[in-house]
Image 1: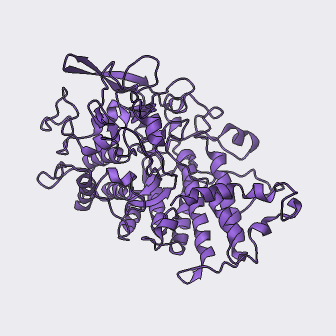
Image 2: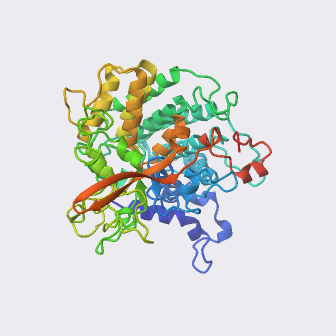
Length: 568
């Protein structure tokens, strides 16, 4: 099940093998060329396939990938328990960077262009390899080629959502003698290119359900190409790029006009994925992250089974199960979860009790956040001041009174952690359903189909049906439904590298980040608990420039045709 990681490591080492010590090499190092990788006599395509795995290696594993933290710890959903002047996510959330100092873990321009170059090398050379293996009656090499193009499209999307328009290279593999002083393509051109690539390759990829899931579940499928297209169109239709461009007449930073049809196109693309009937929501929200080859997974970054999420993010205070509590969810995130009735905690009819704040809440809260009294490692967590898991002092521990629970195994009633699935989900079906609801609401209003999409998410979450609307008010306006959808997305997709970008594409980051991120301080006197909301971190978002990253300083310095983003 986990051989793919070993294959990636082998692929990363193929150049080392080719250029290894002459005493042992089969071919002289000066004779090794691209023809060795893409061998006209290699009917198995062995070296070419290893090269393809090297393109996969550029996929990011989002688990604690940003200086040891989740990227969403730089949003209003969490902060780092290791926060300090040099902490990466704190630098991001406090506007403590410029085009020269942006932390390397999010300064991904060169990183993704390296992946794009590898994909171009594969695309331009694979046709000569006489691969005998077939899929659906044609050579497997065409599936591989589609996979390389999918990865290339994904890497472009990762660039565009951070920087806006970027240089498009097509299939060109540049050499040292080429002029690489390329200008940025417009945002519109980049979206058009990525979408056209997804359309062109979808029917050459494997289809879900896979005939050999144990071997192939890491591979992009037709559904993955369609889901990527849908997500790209969703971003393109969002306020940041569609009508609220931070530099209104600048085609590099978004469209220079508003067009409601972009929302309709996104809705149609999301619905096309749903109509494949190849994916579905799992019955249990918690199982989504612990189940391999599930019907909810569309595209994942495969990892080895381990307990590293627990040892990195689990609560402190357990001698038999070490955790360092790296991620501290905010009070804002906790308050965003409704009651089990589906009603917001601010609704007078919800029954929310601030003196017993975690009872009868949306079950996703318990599966996402560890709070005081949560069952964990055969005990009830003590997150009051001086409690076992919040002892204060110099030990790294929660800074908000909460620990992250999401992605972790079922360790409520065990004494130790054990290895489990920790694959990183890049595209999953709940994201498609929420994207469909969002795009359809923006293009057509709060229709029955919008309601049904949100109800399906809430039903799976464990919200009570009530009169049948799972806590949703009947007859909502577009604006009211938008608020529901944005909150639902926050709850469902927490810590999955969505919130950080959602608050940007919705253009609400200025509001939610220019205020203190909050936590809870619980004081225990006898058997009584007093809950006090406290400021945990003062964050900052500089408007409007921080809605896009700066083009890296060295790229602008060495390329006279490279235009910097506004404000940087």
